[in-house]
Image (tube, rainbow, N blue to C red; front, side, top):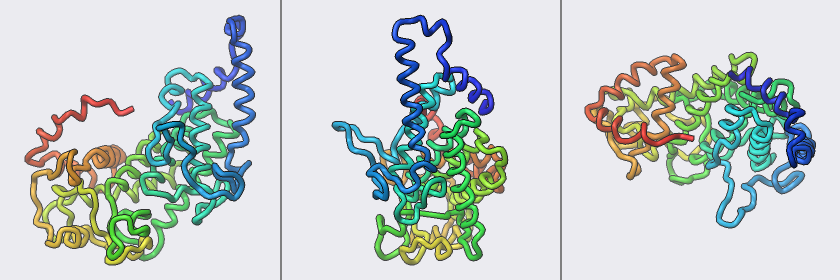
Length: 345
């Protein structure tokens, strides 16, 4: 599918002769072509040090439009489904504009980099959200398109960057590579506290984007993805002091380090230690999923797609983790609580 849609997109870039005879069609075609020319300036390579605030500007979200504001960590998949279904060129431009907004909202400061070497490096969920948006564009955008290829190079560099971190000697064994909250002291200024559900969103993002096969060679990206999958497998552990009991896997926060450091080499190596330091007691197992969506221990919504992608992609231990989860004494109640009734756009 990812190879079929680009061809459709190129065809839709030119208004058919019959359509040109319709009122306003020629004006629309010229308008879209002007937009296209202007959008080329949003290529990372064309504006390597730019942010939304101009050359060498700092990062930040765009200005609000009344009560509405686009945000890096909470924006929809603008244009993706519409372009996938219709191939209409205007939806491709929507995807390109949103990818550019992700790029420009990051800015070049804080070690994020310039041009196609830029990474997002904000909140962990914001990193994931922006990778999702750029990944959707390069996954179904036209092959050879200058804008698409620029963002493809950027995403490829992001994957290579994080895989290099994963391969650093002394890296933790949790599957976690980066967390904004721990270094910023968002949850604690004395110990290392993270929000695992943000990590789970990053994991599911990598799984979803890899399904689009957005690179000719997926080796590096998939290795990066598979490393993160160890995080969702680990948090769905069984009984035993070396594991993290899956019953508490949906907590809002947990402790992964003795100090609030952003160095992933200083984080715990054992999920059993994470459990003990988070809850003040060794893991004793348990077969009842704790928490519900209305309280801070009920963040299952991001975890479920993360483990689902891990199972589909054959991550080591994922099938066993899924089996533990679905064998929970209250699984049937949980599974019937409405997940299938709410569309995920």
